[in-house]
Length: 354
Image (cartoon, rainbow, N blue to C red; front, side, top):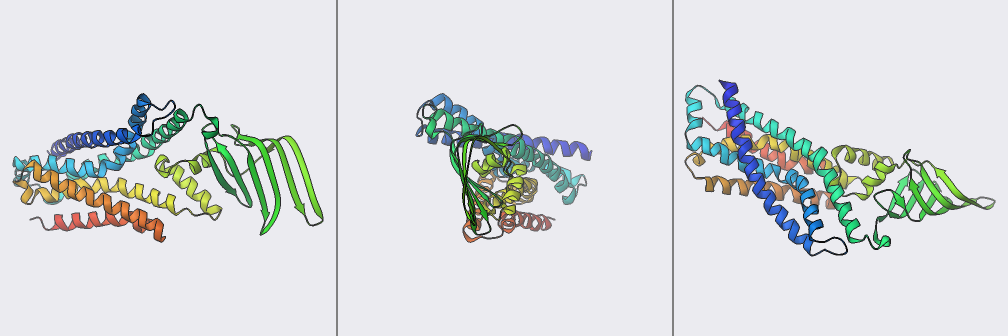
């Protein structure tokens, strides 16, 4: 009997959440589409804007899932409470703890789906969409394709004039230090990374500063091996939203090994983990509310409550994340504080149910 009720409640929550998420994505996609229409140029026209918007929807869904799960759970469980189905379950001998376990099971399923979406689907599609937009906008202007960037590998600093999605670069400037002393300066007219993560430098010219003079070396083609491979270079160019959790951890490790600031990426990583975990809590929070006055209220009241709590959580999370980067706060504390607050409110509300 318990397993049947668990599946019944899970189906109710999942269906309600899916419907709410579809509405939220429709609105978010519309706003994204309208905003992108102002940036059309070159080959980036309305069909490409539609494709770009569609490719970004999985990442938008990942960001909206906590709100969607809360509203969907409030609507689904509220409908069960309004039809006295939850009261019947209680009369049949189910305790509040057992009911909480049932909705927590639904939250666990949603947590797994959220994790898969945020790790394997959303980031790569978002990365592809942003590259597609740049290539379509500047396809006829090669000088605008790619991004200039600085990377560090120990005592070596590299300035790449242009990096495109195929990891073919323009000019490369290399500065090698020995402690505080500049040891060498080099330039390559063109460069790239091959399949084995070796750096291929064309028309390479290096000037080495020795204590007894200056040495100039020239080569038409040089192969170098740096600690920065194609994956790390791609991570340095991508927005944190376009990186999976695994890529974020790899890039954070690279930044720390080279004594570079990793706060932005650490904040994004822990924010993403906490945002995934809060999906588990939202159905239990909804259960606590449907035992109260919302049991006899309408869907409008439940919807309004879900929107208010969801927006409060979203705004608090975003504000803390941005403030943490400005004031150099601990990223774990900043990312988990809203989620822990939601968990404490949920535990307190459920403990008051008789």
